[in-house]
Length: 101
Image 1: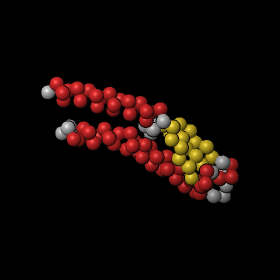
Image 2: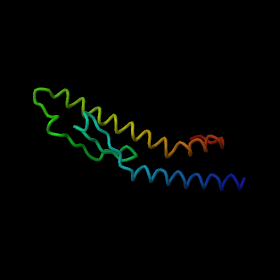
Image 3: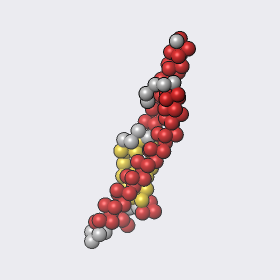
Image 4: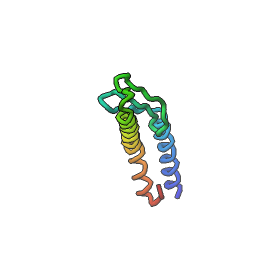
């Protein structure tokens, strides 16, 4: 039982470390060949958006909206990949111990 408690404490420390690494990571999502760039933290918190003036056409707002949406989607996909990379091994370990994750 003591061995199990030590293992759980170790995994808890690893989980906290992985969560801190995710919060500190900066993820960039782009669309339109870099016309729109979105920056987020690894935990999914929005940081900034950059729109190249070439992407702004008052006659075609829909394209700009699509580029912004695509950049957010790209950034969210990168956050998801980073989360799986950092947290995946920990989740597998918890499941292997019969604990919910």
